[in-house]
Each structure stands twice: as structure tokens, then as C-alpha cells.
Image 1 (tube, rainbow, N blue to C red):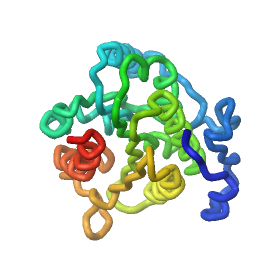
Image 2 (cartoon, rainbow, N blue to C red):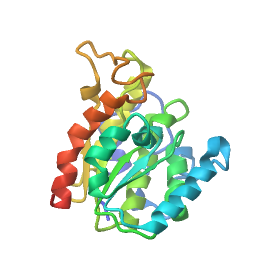
Image 3 (cartoon, one colour):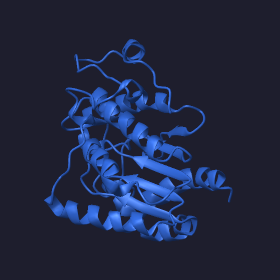
Length: 247
């Protein structure tokens, strides 16, 4: 299992502007973090077709033959949309599967992991991107705690797999408070990189123009990548995954 930094060491490195609930990492957990809604598994029932997507992913899991698991929210899900051409070229040949679900927050992904979506197959590599949908409701420390618990859950389900933990992508056309929160989240979860099974990778700067803005040709709504955005993402991770798979 992973070795996580203590909450005290993280707090000392970057004290929060406000006093959030204590950040407790999975290595110290027997139960979900009390008081941190981003770390307590919950389903979305059938809102926005969420249940149907979950059932479809259960069938995909049962079918097996998955060497690379992509898992996360709509940004991952959209590999089947704007990113489809890139996916078919770069990742389908690697036996990759897309377990992204639009609108998911960390707590929804935790529920999915604990309710069958990580059973029936054994990936060699995992690409995890989650957290942006928590930005309006949770503190950076809470979001990081939810992500850390997801990492721990995935490591428990797939102890032989290497996990590529993506830094939360930048959002908003220009730098703002949400960008600042994303940066705080990434500064914390970067410490989950253990140099062995978990690799943290922040490619956020690759999506930005020189003035720090995001253009519509990279993220059409300043959040979800276009085909050009998925080209950027693929370029940054394809070599890592192929190396891990021995390709």
C-alpha cells in the first residue's frame, strides 16, 4: 500500500486560508473521513443517466480484456466524444477502457469503485483524473482527501497496476479563484507520488496560452478539452503508458 504524508506535515507546508476539517489520509483510515463529504462514497441514483452509465460500465468490467483503465469524470468520459479520434489512434490499441462519467465528483467515483466497476479484470496501468466538479462545493484539502482515498482504493483493487495520477486540469478562461484552488489541490496530491506504483503528472500548463488564458480551441467551454486538447493530453501520457506496458 502507499505511504502517505501525515496531515500535519502537509498543513505545515501550505497552511489553508481557512480552517478546513482535518485532512486524514487513507493509510490512517478504517472508515471514510468523518466530516469530509468529498471522501464519503455516494451514488447519484439516476440523475442525468448516471445509473445507466454505471450499469454499462459493470458490463464492460465483466467483459474484461482491459490493460489500461481510464477513470474519472466527464473529461475522461469525453474520450468518447471530442477525443474519440485520438483515443482510437493512441489508446484503443493498448486495450484501454474508458470509465469516465460526466458530472462525477470524488465521492461518486468512490462509490463506483466500491460497487463493481473495478471487478472482473486486472489492468496493468490506470489513468486517474478527478476533482474538478468538487471545486464549487469543497475546500482544496477536502478534494485532496477524496482523491487520496480514491488512489488508495484503486491500489487496493489493483495492487499490480501502475497508477498515473493526473493533476486536476485548469479551468476558467483566465486565472481566478477556482484556478487557485486547483493549484492547491495539485500541490497536495503531488505528494501521493511514491516513485514506484503511483506517478503524479500535472500537465495543466500545456493547455494554457502564454498569458495564462485558456483558448476555445483547446477547451471549448474553458473546462472540457476539444480534440486539440485531447491531442495535448495524449502527447503527454502516451509514452508513459507504453513504457509501463512494455510497448
